[in-house]
Amino acid sequence: MPNRPTQATLPDLLARLAQGERLATSRITTELERASPLMPAIVQALQPRLGRALVVGFTGPPGGGKSTLVNAYVTALRQQGKTVGIIAVDPSSPISGGAILGDRIRMTTTLADDGVFMRSLASGGHLGGLSPAAVRIIDAFDGAGKDVIVLETVGTGQNEIDVAEIADVRVVLSAPGLGDGIQAMKSGLLEIADVLVVNKSDRPGAEQTAQELASALTLRTTEPIPKVIKTSALDGTGVTELTAEIERIGKLTHARLPQSERRRRRARFLIARAAADIVAATIRDGSTKDGSSQDLQVLLDQVLNGTLAPDAAARTYLLNHMTKQPPD
Image 1 (cartoon, rainbow, N blue to C red):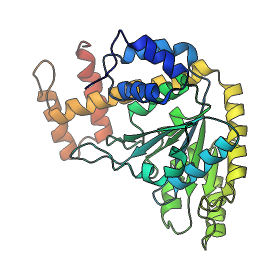
Image 2: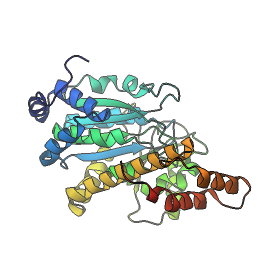
Image 3: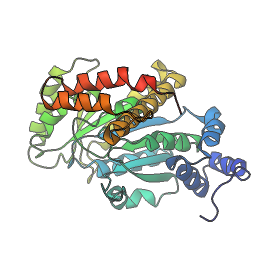
Image 4: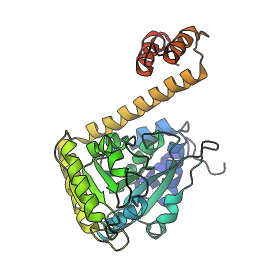
């Protein structure tokens, strides 16, 4: 690939990134997304500049209008003079691994602004809503001096809670007419929300949806109880209130947690995801480094005949097998 960064050109590229140059930001994010050989050097060089940006995650069931609301939120931030990086995670093709990149289509107004930089990512099949590349690109945007970094997750319901480990502020969306969407949110997304949004509030049923969310919050086991805000991304209703609430919570989060602890949470996510991927790949492959798959076959039979639950089989496999393997 022409003009790919090298060890020799990396210092100049990083200096341009620190000035917020779009081309440098694009090239650095590409290297981090691909986990190229330059990635360790890039991350190490960025260290003094990291931890300053506010990271805001938008998540919720499909159909809530996340992309349109993110566009409205970013517009409000730009009116305040703040620079923004957007990481939009789209569903991956199970065949090619590529993403549809629909978020880019819905954010064309925002993307024409030089104060905004967006990177669309494929989810990579991760049910938690984020791929490890998203965390690496946060570092690139932070290093480029962005004031706010917005994560928009793919939208898969209650499983999509990775954003809780990554974002400083978690915004969970719903909308009128989603039906079982509220029920799907109860056991997962409601627990992680810092702000709850009923988007498309100009539609019939918005008030009922807001009441259902408020009622569902009685099941929440953690404090504080989040606000429920009604918005309409198309006409701007509630966007000012949402922007102010996100800023308020962000200031509290940054005051409560030092940047080192916030970044450690993201590192913990990366390690946990890498470990899960390694274990899953090993089990699917059915083989081990020492060539023995007998223990795995026994566990498979036990799960199939009902004498062992899958979670117990996973623990047994980890304890008896993975610990025996030396690191790469």
